[in-house]
Length: 310
Figure 1 (spheres, rainbow, N blue to C red):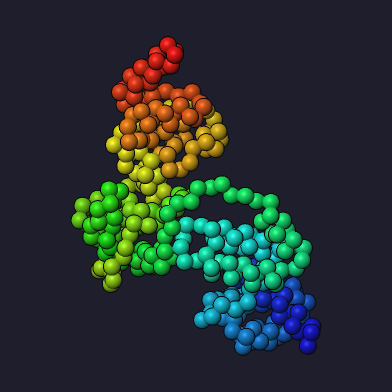
Figure 2 (tube, rainbow, N blue to C red):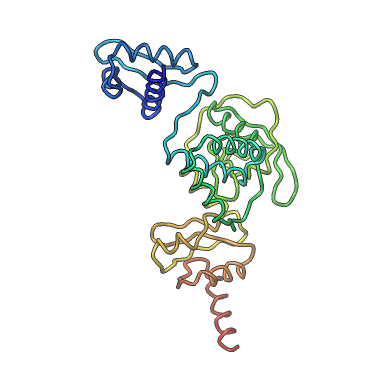
């Protein structure tokens, strides 16, 4: 009986490791006959696992999704990765999943062997996060938006702008983009007949969704469009600056939300005032050349003269 149980666990681990398995290869891996593999597959099905099979010389097995979540078998590195992810999720920007993440993490840690539990406990004790937290978004909002994107259904929602005013919007959702601090929705605004970027924490969905739509071709990839909008075009004053430093260095010092960094070192950014843009560039600690606008070059020249006189 014990040998059968161990073999079932090994079979389940193999089925979870890749999409398709020929029956003969499973038999060789488990050192049993193909008939034993068939019997073991039936035992797993009785336990609730959805395992699809095909017959013939090229037949095999595929583990499918069931109505309920069956036990998973994780190797050491996978278990540690899941634990770290759950720990991060408990303190992330999606509200409503903190307690759920902690419950799942507690269950996982109780089942881990001591060697792995010690690794995770040591990392928790040695790690201090100084990352700034952005506004939280309800998990239900993100899942509802994701479902509308998948099903090509128009969204209707109340949206609070940066000035605090609210308006009802209708949009065809394209992608959710996470910048590390905030969630954004890239969508085609039907009322304005243009692509718009919405902060997900400012969205209050209306039910039901609108009609289905045929997806449009976005102006660029979703991440690029959102970063350009959030970091440059959304500001009253916009600038293009060539940063003279290796891309590895620029990637380290520039968070995604400051603007769009091109492969040639050109940064598209912006600010409430040109003084804000000048001050930001001064904090980077790298040489740069202003491409646009000319008024920013004039301001920097004036500031350089003032600082030199000081």
